[in-house]
Image 1 (cartoon, rainbow, N blue to C red):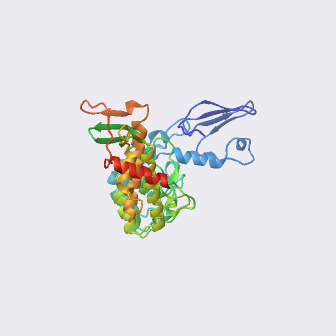
Image 2: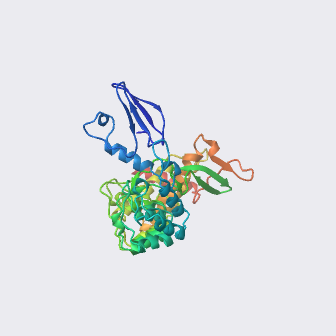
Image 3: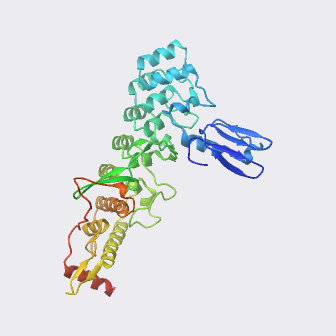
Length: 416
């Protein structure tokens, strides 16, 4: 399936051709004998002709990924017209009009758990919009704090994905357990070092402008474990209340992502720590995870292996850049940001990363430097903005090496 919001697929006897793009609730299949229109509510009979072209799992997965609780077009489109009563109630909930919501429910003789469009309940909306006042009133009236909608999302799931800390705390205090939420949408897109839009350079300072910086995700909102989501979005307050509630993060069954210097198969890759090299300002989140002794920290052996890898990269970067002039003076033809990071943290071959904090400090700086270099040395010069008539960025080493120091490194490397 294409990760787009509007899809139309034409099917002949044996050929499926993409003709144009429609809204996710308008997936249309046609053949010489049949014409199928599929919405996110379509139920597939395994014995039907339609089952040859699409499965129920594919429909449900696509609907989940492109669902957006706060997108008006989700409620009224070619195949969906929102009930006027539900629309009025939804807009009151979005406006955080507590009195209006309660009066509307009473005046229209509605249940506090009325199943609105796609089986959403009022508490789900107030949870998403971080309206703890309305949410508390709804709970006092008997609202189901564990209700799930058509997408199997609960009030707490909606609170987490929108970083709604007040309603998340209310729900946790009301008895909902964090582990009850198995998956949520990647609703907010955070800044990652691998998604750099532009670099603004002012003297020696480099400011990163990210492609996405905590904005609503209008693309495919793939399912993600809620704790991975909270850590990768750097939601400190939310992470703290989750850990304070007694939740103990576990390792995933499969590796999620790798880290520089960490071998494949390490528990670090299966833990919430795996993303800490890619997010800016990771320090507070790391402090919190270490405070609660969250599983997945690198072992002493892994810290040493990572250090050795870092040191080796440092040596290789020198071997690839050094030259000797006519006076037998050793010097480096060029500098780079990653070498400077390795030099800062891994200069001594006989040392190691003594602390987990230092390891993540290095791996975060290294990843940042690596991603910046990808932009600096690319052909996309429109991604680089210089300030105050500056025309180039001169990379400076962490410590400038003398000829003797370079010579010693080269000679020792050749002895290995």
